[in-house]
Length: 302
Ligand code: GDP
Image 1: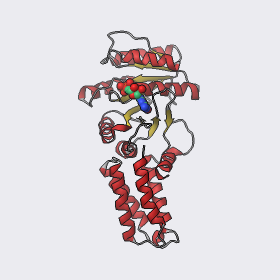
Image 2 (image 1 turned 180 degrees about the horizontal axis):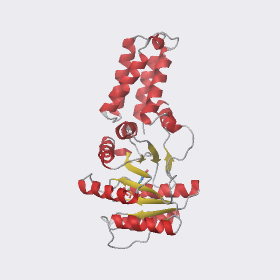
Image 3 (image 1 turned 180 degrees about the vertical axis):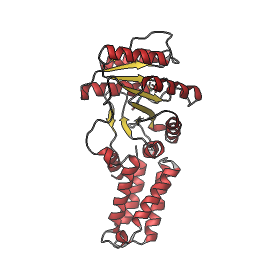
Image 4 (image 1 turned 90 degrees about the vertical axis):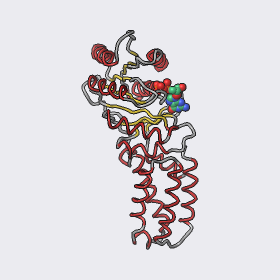
């Protein structure tokens, strides 16, 4: 992840660092190279354009160019703006729980996304994290009635994670399952209810209608969109479609362990306006991390 981008930026930076004085044209030339590097990393065009405009505006000022270390100053500005692009310092600071579960229990966490994005796995990973790290008592329920094996898959993951799953009642529809899950959670004192909704191969109207109906019935405290970082621009397009239809509160970026160029991670915040809350880093149930913009920026800038 980010390897090529990292190399490209470092080449530009070492050139900037190597010079005592910088003129406006030098900055503009460097930013042109950064722009190409971002686009090659599959960052969405408007996001890359805004980024370059912001960095350039800050970097061509007299204060920067007349300073003793103009190159360093420009690099610092790129770093700051990269952190902002990934979600901002406020989200990387502190260890506050990434999910807002301060509601009357059960706090409902609704997981949405396309089929194959890693939604079911992420549901179990987050449930396990809440149980092991935050002392929560989570219940999981699969609302995926399209794929016959989906509900069983969540039950298997629940056993592996030692997290309870709602018993399967054949023939029930998603909203009915959501209501039954809420009833069971209340009755049995589960404080978090994770709803793994149905995926589709593509975003379509039926899927969006179902997501809205479930959100309407379950009043979720968090709606997390799961996207596959390997799909780059497609992940960004999916995020755009979902964010217009369901009240997303955050994003889970999966397959961060894969060989992605990083464009999805870099574009997601700007496109959805929502933070990336977790990163999936492998197939195992422990392979999930909080997403820290500052740390990711450090990794990119080496
Ligand atoms: P769903 O259709 O969206 O529910 O997707 P699944 O949760 O079934 O995941 C599809 C496949 O991706 C499974 O084989 C998962 O083990 C795998 N997977 C999910 N998240 C990650 C991740 O972060 N990294 C890797 N390497 N594989 C993942």
